[in-house]
Amino acid sequence: MKWFLGVFTTLLVSFAHADQVTDFGPYQLHYNTFESTFLTPQIANQYGLIRSKGRGLLNVAVTTQDPGALPQSQRAIVSAKVTNLLGQIVSLEFMTIEEGDSIYYLAPFTKTDDEILKFTVQAKLSADNQPMTVTFQRHVYVD
Image 1 (cartoon, rainbow, N blue to C red):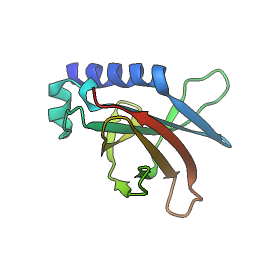
Image 2: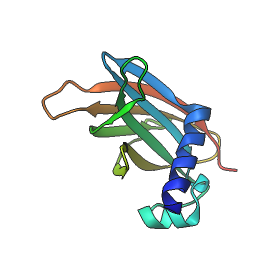
Image 3: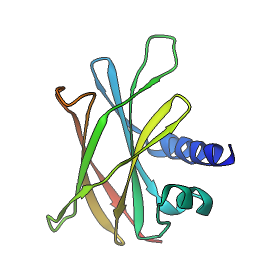
Image 4: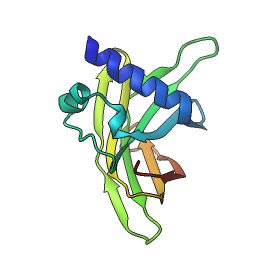
């Protein structure tokens, strides 16, 4: 239960500071990045994630929300690519995290100091659906 609270708190804090949301009809695509060092060593170990100043995490979730109700997590097929200013493209590998009714997807990425990264995220509810696609940039640092 402690690990659940640790992950939930970390993600809640990261969502509060840098959450981006794009609406696609009845669905919302949530996405943000955060430092891998925000995770406790125990949480990182549990999920096989590396805590390092040179690594970040991309967090993605798909939800629906009826008026006056809490958001409902949706399963999705998630993919993403990150591109640096030199045009180098890296496909990210996501892991699915399911905790209670929450479903979200995490993908680690590497970064260097004072770098601008462009992310392209796609999420589909099934293989036959059109992807929900967002593109965003982050200016990342290594402290």
